[in-house]
Length: 431
Image: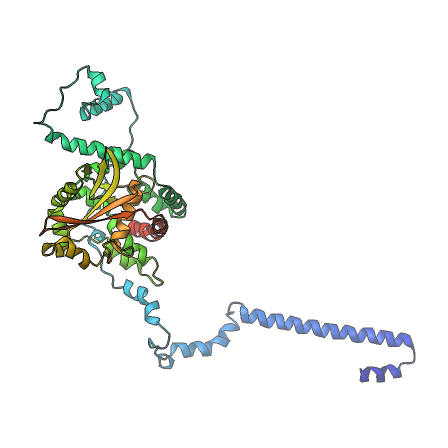
């Protein structure tokens, strides 16, 4: 302002002074505007892409340093905290073993129940009616159509009717479970629909063709796999989360740095390994049931295959048995034949088993707990008798496990997320 006063003093007239002031401020504004424009140009050059004419000439000395391997220092695992954990999945993926079903000469398994639906004609209706009558000759419909009632069942052929009675009871149980599902299963079905909507077209097509089932297919699958020792049983469980693997997958979903490719490949890889406990479980399952019925003479055990519920067909459960009382299903039955039972009586075995607590109850943080909880959810049962059979004493020690709603809700939500975001893409890639 000192210079401004000196020059203003030289002006003889006020008008000339005003013109000079306006001209002065105009020049100052133009200077500020040019400064702002230059600042914007510099910022645009720094933030924008490297131009071929100017940026490359600037970056060329730096790029030459990068291309010189002598100037690159080696990075050790200790330079970054836990860098080996971060790079684990990327490094291991290169050396993952390939399962047999990925080879071109191995035939891909297909479900026998995926057939095109025929148009229902009059001849087809007659064919179905004859098939139903032949399958259920003692039903009211069969008796009405034939007009002939068969004599009462004699003791001599009562034994031959047991498989048919088992099948009828099993169908009755499944019909009840499908028509009146557990409310947690309905919640899981809603989550299933939302997650499937976000899947790719290929994944949705695979799901509809290989995973989804109708009520009739679910009934047939369970009946056809009773005994759990045939190829159909292995096929149906090969692309679903079943009771034996649900808890390990549930706990692994909480892993902050998971390797799902390796986890799923190892869990669903074909295996011919049969442990001593598995062999004893197969050999002494009948003895285990007999020991249970001795203590519970008013109950009946129905054999079951794999149960795939139409609401959540990505899940499966193979029950060791369903307990019926007064012709109504009351409990799930899970049988274990521990190796320690070969030498010790039930009172000793109960204290030695690592999956039982000090009071003989099944521990909540164990795979068997997740296994029976999934079975109760699918069959809509409120309790499970968990048996441990001791071979040396021909006796059992049992624990009644109640349905855990809080645990099952978290279990189903986590398994659904894992299946549709990890398992379904894995299946599409390998099939």
